[in-house]
Image (cartoon, rainbow, N blue to C red):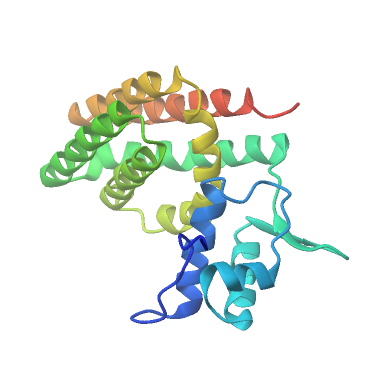
Length: 222
């Protein structure tokens, strides 16, 4: 039986964007492994769309750093080097910590309550041990955090890195100990925000990313 999990519906939204979303999700979920060649004909069969749509989607994913094209081999899933991962976590830590500091200072009470709701959802996701559910819940937490920060530049800057961040998030969360640690760290961020303590929120957020980096880097080759 043909695997239909990557089939793309060709209505309601631009086909290219749908293909980008499907392939991005497959890569960040590990469906296509780092270093694996992405053959256009095979992707056309899997998604059910034309070669031009697949080719445009691959170009978009290459601009996001998820795909690289090598001479005589064509497109393949990028391998994230240890140095790249360190750089990624440094950027993520700086920007998310800034967002937490600004949120603690600027967010409305309604936005704080909304953030508390996302933490409850995240706690439930961690209890389920479903990586995809955890990743979705964390994404929602950060969407609310970034919106409440009031800084319109942090979100777009992070969004360009989120595909690779989610790759690394799955690596770090694969450690059995990481889940309980992660939710404790997120609760510390929330507690600082509730107290309206921007510097404590900054420190707690930065600590969270640093611990996630440690868990992920432990699983990458030196």
